[in-house]
Structures are given as structure tokens and as C-alpha cells.
Length: 165
Image 1: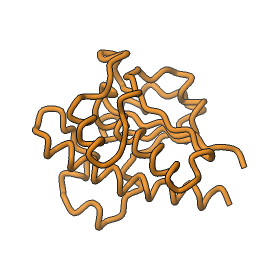
Image 2: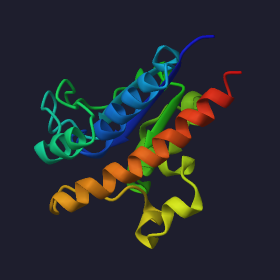
Image 3: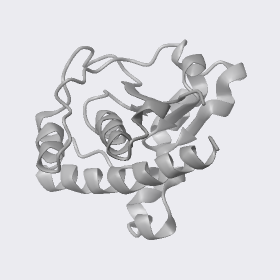
Image 4: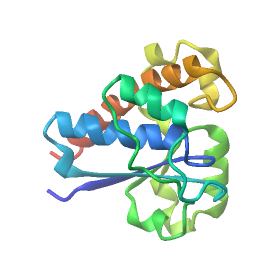
């Protein structure tokens, strides 16, 4: 069984997408299936290239046992569209950007992260657009994003496991 490769994408790769990467790695490892996956993250812009995740994302994750400190921001590059089986945008704006820059032969790999959520996970109507950006808010926004990411990532891992059998 070959590993499945998933890339999470947000704007600057310092809040939402590194949170998803860190949670996905940890959840898969805790379930003993980490070896079946490659998880990574990137941003649609390179403004934060080389920077660690936002300290508030790091703190929220650490409180729940996730370590985001080794992660560093990077911008998505063309080869990512071919290297990864799934390129998952954290919101509709990111998906729109990805659709514009993705080579036509790789467009089937694009999707929205919340496509793996269930209706009960999305009780908040704001989520129609995707995972909300916590950057301009307080710590409660990072906790909310982390909860949403945990639930959706577990559903994503379950989906990937079902499709590897």
C-alpha cells in the first residue's frame, strides 16, 4: 500500500494549513497509520516563507497535545499539484486561487478541506466559505479553528483509509 499525500493550503501558511498539517500527522500517528500518509501545508502567497506558525496557533495546538513548532511556512509551487494526491484549500478563496494556478492535468486533485466535514460539524453558517481565518481575532478563534480541524481531519483520515483498502 503506497502512502497518500495530502497538502493543506491557506493564505500565508501560518494559521489554518499548518494547524491541519500538524493535527493530521498527530492523529494518523496516534492511530498507528502515520506511515500510510504524507501531510504537508503551503500558502497561496510567500509573504511568510520560512516563518513558524502564528504563536497563537502553536499555543492552541500545544494545549491539545499537538506540536506545530517544527513547521515552517512556504508557498505552493507547481510541482505540488503533481506531488500530492489531494490539494485541499482551507476556504473557497484559496480554492479559487488554486484553480487559477493549477495545471489542467492536475485539477482533479483540488478540493475544499471542509468537503470532508459532515453537516453537524458545520452548524455555523459562516463555514459555507471554509475554515474561518483566526488571524485577526483572539485566542478563541484559534481554538475554534483547531476544533473544526480536528473533527474534519479525522473524517479525512477515515476517508483515506477506506480508499486504501
